[in-house]
Length: 286
Image (cartoon, rainbow, N blue to C red; front, side, top):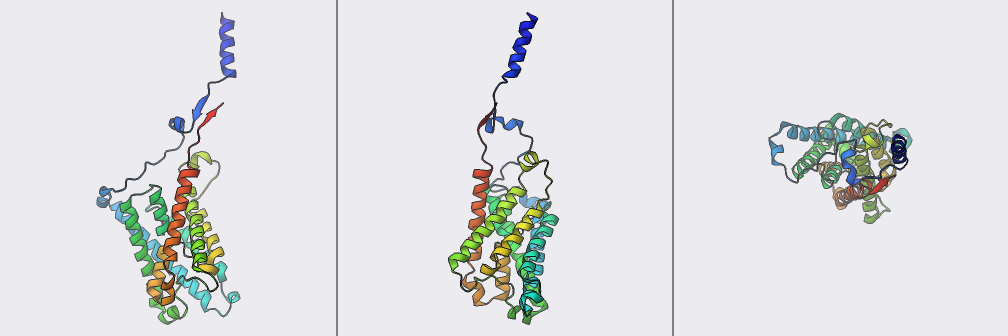
């Protein structure tokens, strides 16, 4: 009898029970998924961390505009690209500042520094509508103040050199500019979702990752590609701040492109992440 029981156990090991994975195996996952944020969360308004996060977004966007607008003006002031940091330097300034500022503020506000990023995360229910609106307002105010300080330091040069305002370059249509902004923002927001995905720690635990690095590098690459087309917006607060302080007709002619494009790109990235990337497969483990 003992021999027969042993044979049964061996047989059971040869043909293990098929266990479902995916939705039906959620209790076995080795990472903690944060719950979806409520649409409205009135309790946030009574929390200091809520107001502190908005202040962090304001300061970060202020510093972002200050450094990047000065870099753009420095390139335009030079007699030739070879005498300045050129387009590559502008791209590094934008990407490098995002890397540094996201690193500094990620633990306080999430390090959005961009209404399009905030909008995409809101669509994915990563934050409430209350917080999203508050962040966007603070980001826009920070951008206006950042560009304003640059103009305050050198008003004549600011107006003469374009003030870092986004415009669609001659030879490109509004449709081309809109497409560049949509795709560029998609790249950025998709990278944000991937770099901050709670599932990544479980799936790729052997790959060390510093979230601000790929986000900053994505900003750098998008700028390399689209500076010749639109000057690269992919951040409505950045475009708004420079346009308000520069305040010339050419800065407002196509300004809608730098809001509509980034918001569409962010929405597409959010949908792609939620519906495709994070879709839970239904498989069986043999």
